[in-house]
Image (cartoon, rainbow, N blue to C red; front, side):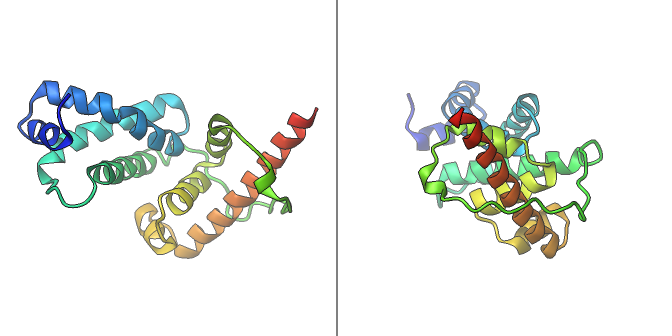
Length: 181
């Protein structure tokens, strides 16, 4: 197994064996990112493949400054955003004036959910909500950056994030109620 620096250098020289090793090493981690942004597993796998093509095409641009994993994550998130934009016409669009979901007050520190349950709940969000939630809450983007990336107003980003949180709270509360039975 090659050291990361050697693996990157080999990939920069288009060595297929190194590319295969890089894929095997990082695909599970990067698929986790894709799953958060995609509407289903099949779309997540497509985004992963497209993202790795971009990684291999642009790996010569990586200058060994900063985290290589972070560099790949950024490319994968950007690939997921591009996929979202490309498929926007196919996605169901949520009306901005959708009725607000009643806010639920609960101490979430007392609730335990599996990673799979949380992923399922996040993936069940409407596409716009899911994208904004992932970018803001998980990736750490600011609403201004999200607005630019998704080509929406900053206020739309903020309202979609707020509505996403409310829906997540409602869905997790329902999951807790189901577990009690």
